[in-house]
Length: 450
Image 1: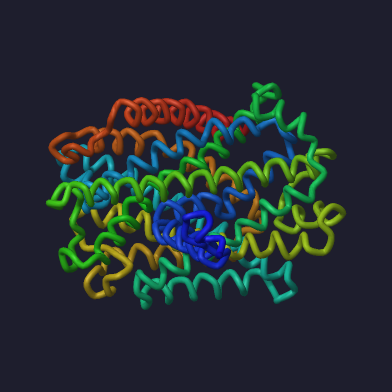
Image 2: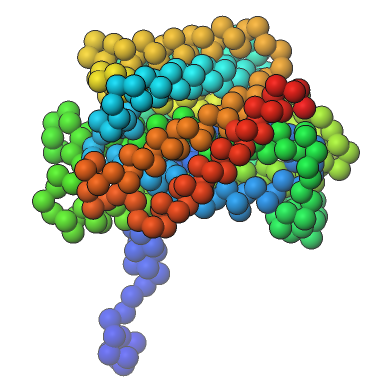
């Protein structure tokens, strides 16, 4: 008599269990998209450089920013994502609907300022790609920066969004290199715990200024526009409204809409946890190495060389791969986010799945951003400084865009039943207040040179 007959239960084998587990993993992987890409783009070379600078300068003293930033990131990006899901429209389009002419002019000026900041950030990211290639012995960094910029521009203007989205998801894997470094570095975990609890907080101007950069690179305004735009592009790809995205408010099947919203939240929250895990890993790993001697970080090579005694020859490869991968991911996100925001605000067509002929303003802004980034990368010799400076600009600019986002997301006429609940409203306005204070500190430290 078989085991199945004696127990009264059907016999299963390891193959069936493994297949079910693989199926669950595949389903989970399929729901990851805009949230994961946004979280990974948050850890672009600007983020990597800023976190490394924090770990090298203040050891574990800024680790408290990781657990503090996580709920704020989750709340803000979920709100941005939900506005797109509910309406099928981007933040730029929604700002056009929500506000009258004069407020729109102010928002337009803010987006233009964001575009300038994104150009600086893109330039720094392109320089990081070039430095990564140079670290691998592939040739001059400026040459690779230019080639990367041209290649990204051509890919964005000729490739379909479905292909681009898949490439973006795979580029997220490169960030795991920084998590791997954490496991081989000699980390002082009791000191890490003190840092996470904020026991090493300082009121020194340099410390406060770097906090602005850390918060600016984790809660960056360009990511608000990207999260919304990427979700709209995903909705457009569905078999529903042709080229038009159909929001959840306009879908008759409420149960399916609720399921879509749950999946989207899982995507966003997973992306933000992934982003903060990388942030924590970079800070703790550089604190365990560079932070012990107070080493100054000016280039990507500085970080890699300092980690060589711990990681060995793989240090150069790990950090080079991370800089290259996240740079290739970060540049198009930077260029497309501001272009989508301004195009939407002006009532113009936009989208990576549209041809340049159908969305001329969007592609013109995207192209100008990348070309300007390439040109700036030729004339700057301080990529780490430029990366941290661009993070500071984001910290200063975040609060106004958060206010705009919060006003849109609480509007019942726009959002209907999908408007903010009390938790989203509380966390969203709290984040806006925090970034307003951070922006004020950023202005003060920038003007005073502190």
